[in-house]
Image (cartoon, rainbow, N blue to C red; front, side, top):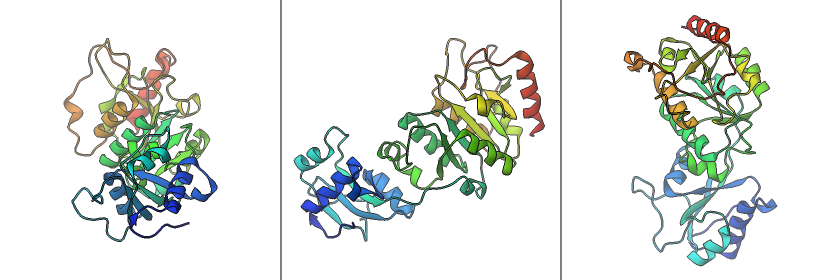
Amino acid sequence: MEVTGTGTATDQDVALVRAVLRGRRAGRGLFLVDDPENIDQAVRAGVRVLKIFHTSEVPPRAPDGSAFRGVPHARVPADVAKDVFGVERSSRVFAVARRPRAHGLDALARRDGDVVVLDGVRLAGNIGAVVRSSAAMGAAGVVLVDSGLTTVTDRRLVRASRGLVLSLPVVLATAEDVVEFCRAADLPLVVADAEAAQPVHALGSVTRRVALVFGSERRGCSEELRARAAGAVTIPTAPHVESLNVSVAAAITLFCRRPDDSADHRRPSSTPGVARGRPGETSGDGRRERAGLLASLA
C-alpha cells in the first residue's frame, strides 16, 4: 500500500510504519530509512521513497538545504512515534520506501574496482563502515557471507552505511557462490591474514582487479575461502596491538589499492601486526607460497 498526502500522519500512515518495523504483511516490500542524509541518499540512488515522517513542526530538508520535492511528508507527534518504534531506536525523521531489487554477483562483474568480501562479519556497524569505505575508495561492491542478514535494506545497515548501501551494490551470498563467481570472473582472492608474509601495501603493485576478503575479528576468514586464496596480506601494527577492527582493516587495504596511493614508502615494523585472521593456522611454507602467488598477480 502506498501512502499519500501531507500534513499530519493518519492512522493509516502510523499502521503502515508499524507494519514495516514489525515485518508484518502490510509492510512487505517496504523498508524504513532514518535521517535526512540517508533519505537523500536513497532518493539519489533512485529508491522510491513513498512518504517522509517527522516529529518536529518544520518539515525536514535535504543536507543541501533543499526540500524533498515530489515526496509527500507528514508530521507524527513525538509520543506517537515513540509508541510506534517501541523498543527499537526511535527517529525524529524517517521515511517509508519501496525496497529496491536485490543485486546479484553479476552486478559486480560489470563494475570497475575491487570486490570486497566480508566473511562472517555480523555487526551492522562494522558492515556499514566497510560499505562507506568501499564506496569512497572506488570498490565495485561488497559481498556479505554469513552476515546473519536477510536483506541489505536492514534498518541498522542502512543507518550504519549512511545510506550508501542503497547506491553501492551489496550482495548476500555464500562462500561457495563467491568462489564460483571469482573463478568465472577470473578474479583472484586475496585474504587479509594475521600470519601473511606480505604487508598490505604490496597490493599497490597489483594492477588487476582482485577480491579482498576480510573475516571476523574473532574467527577470521573461513577455511573455504582461505584455501582458495591466491595471496594474503597483513597490516603491520605495533607489537602490543592484537588486531584491528575489520572496518579499519578494510579501509586501510582499500586505500593501499588506490592507483594514486603513496603508501609504497611505508615499511612494516619489525614485528608485524594483525589484519584479520587466526594466529598460528598458516605454516611458514604456506606463507612463503602465498607471498609468491601474490607477487605473481602484479
